[in-house]
Length: 290
Image (tube, rainbow, N blue to C red; front, side):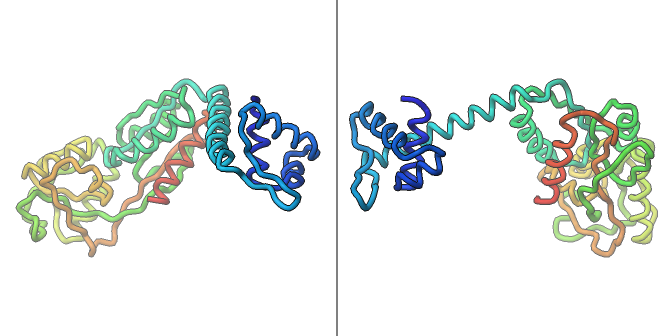
């Protein structure tokens, strides 16, 4: 038995007409009839009932069709996988991201990449937008997930998400938001994330007060952990709620604040990395469809 026997059988089972099946297979009808007869002889079963008016599958033929479809699909999958491995991009892809990106997003992207490029090693770097900009411009990163604004003559950007700010509080404020001007704040270090720090100050001033920042951190998870333990409150992007770092956190929307923030993809347009566009397309699609 050869693969062509299964393909011929499957085609005839779908068409239930020797003439149409032969035409679909680009052969004449007599060779098709011989191939089916040879298959039935080898299996020692009758796969089709035939008369002048119709062709029909026997119960044995129905079972064999199901089995044949699985074998043909497995073969096609194996051919595709073998081609992917031969053409696979190998080496390293360096992806930077800001700490407010929920890790399930990164996990989702890595699973897709591993299926498409099984020989590619992806290195992840959680660093600020400022440091990503420098690394992207110098070629130390291939792609960055950053927070706007990003001003660079060397880099191209793709918008991913525009979002509002919200208030992160510990559990004592579960039923009501606190009086914002009277509590201490936890935020990013102003040198680590200067643009974000300015946005944070702008939101507070829009709400009519100057924040008293008593703790500064270099990543969003640390900010939220300190808030959860009652060391202050924080103004954070809405997407930070996806980090789920502590069950004692509660978030309140700041609906009266027209100021927002945006997440971008940033990359060097002159990059020759063969997997770059794949990353851009799949990360963008995730944000569009989520």
